[in-house]
Length: 183
Image (tube, rainbow, N blue to C red; front, side, top):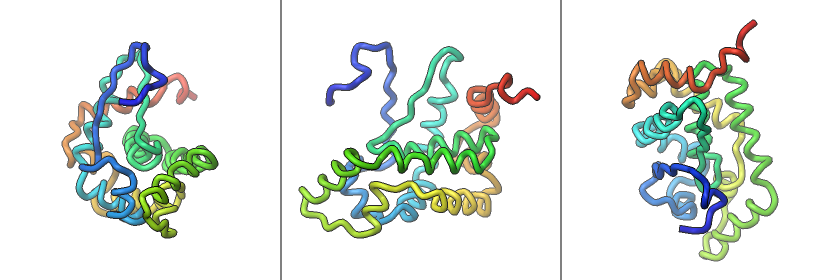
């Protein structure tokens, strides 16, 4: 693996692939655009989302958890959004957190990702550019609404994919700081 900023630190890495092929160029050409990618994750990878959320749940009270993927926006964005939503965080805050990612991807990172596609001779369509550089609030909002229609809630979706009620309670305890919510 490549050198890492966490080398030498006391860090446990959990490699939990959501896609069979983690190559972003391959994914972009298979599922062009955010909506098809997110639909694929929700339809086909619910158990993997639950596995990632279990890592958050398992954190000791004094530990931090960093969730990340290649860009830190799609797989990471869904894991974090689903964890926050299931823990009871206000939906507007969940969506705003997700959408803030796009600003962090501008410039050098975005240029490097588009260069990967160009080096492989892959023509960048508008859907592919969106897939690798954007995190529009309306895409996550539509996905959350779809899950609400089909499952009743994010919590129900996660429970249907293997999360237990006890784990759901622990997720809320891990994410929500009671002192911050006290009135």
